Image (tube, rainbow, N blue to C red; front, side, top):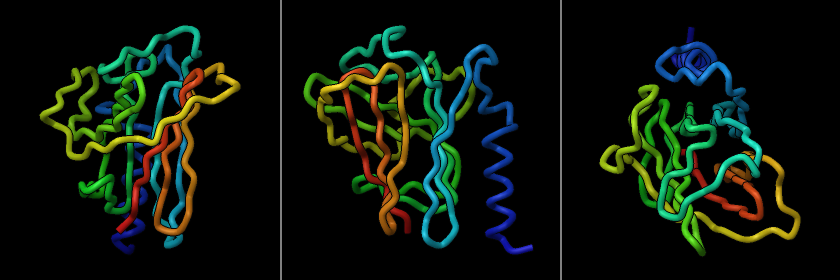
Length: 166
């Protein structure tokens, strides 16, 4: 079996089964994915909370439903100027008044508090206000070539960050 197939099976298993990444059973999760041209994939798992049920706080990591988003990647990625190896990571959008920052963190232990010292990548997000607010957290990827643009919509906020596959 090729290393690519083994890695893909391992990451898919982590996405759906590993207790280290366990989410609260009472909170449903959703997954967004980006399929790269060479067959490798990037996934992000998150809690699709209602926009009116949770407030975001400027300067504080946004953890929908009290849990960070989880990124699984089969490809080395860059975010801003930082390299993200193949693997699993927690993702923290950090809202500010006029912009958001995206932090990718290597600590994936369930229940661990956010620690900025464990960030392996941090980049500003393009941020805009939308006319029609979303009623729940929406997370998606847009794929163009080697780029997977993470799109996060919450209330009237729309924020975007580019991951580039190596």
